[in-house]
Image (cartoon, rainbow, N blue to C red; front, top):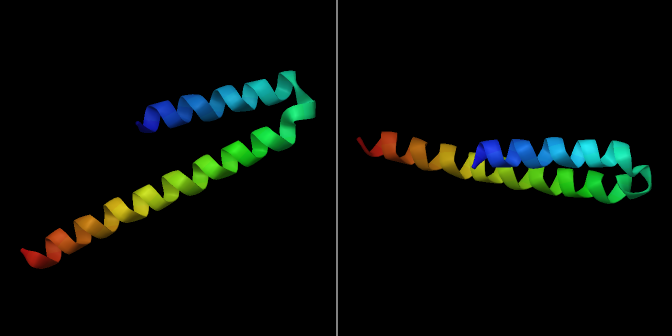
Length: 55
């Protein structure tokens, strides 16, 4: 899943160079993707911490 997100980010950046008019929309999509993946990583980390504290 992480590789898919990285590929999407790279393709959006390349698209931004080809179409600078849509750069704002692409920046918002990249920001949304970064926030979403950050919250997923935090959730994964917290679940791992809970499992370790139970053991």
